Picture 1 (cartoon, rainbow, N blue to C red):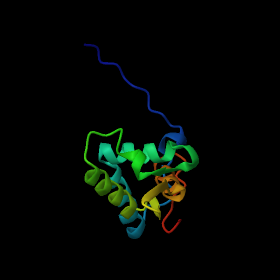
Picture 2 (picture 1 turned 45 degrees about the vertical axis):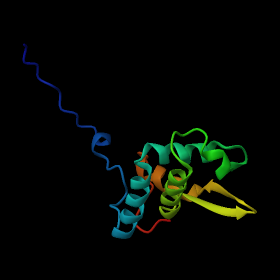
Picture 3 (picture 1 turned 120 degrees about the horizontal axis):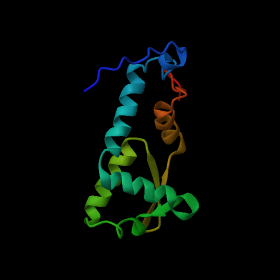
Length: 123
């Protein structure tokens, strides 16, 4: 095994912070709830299914088919996504329609982007 000396990079770009400023407590709690909701594979797939549905909203009757879980389990997962602020819904007759809240995805995306656009209180 050879001992090779690695060069030290002096470029300031390597040390640029990913965020403009640290998250405040309220933002951290809100975003943590969203990430926690998305940590379940069924919920992540549900969000993706709703977001990719034609017209941007999906009837609950269309959501249970692709999953090997019961309708009450799908309803539970949808409630978790709704309480986390990722989706919203509306009852129309006997069916409930769901859609993704774009501002929630923007919050998550801006935190994860290298642009560091999110800052405390930016909503």
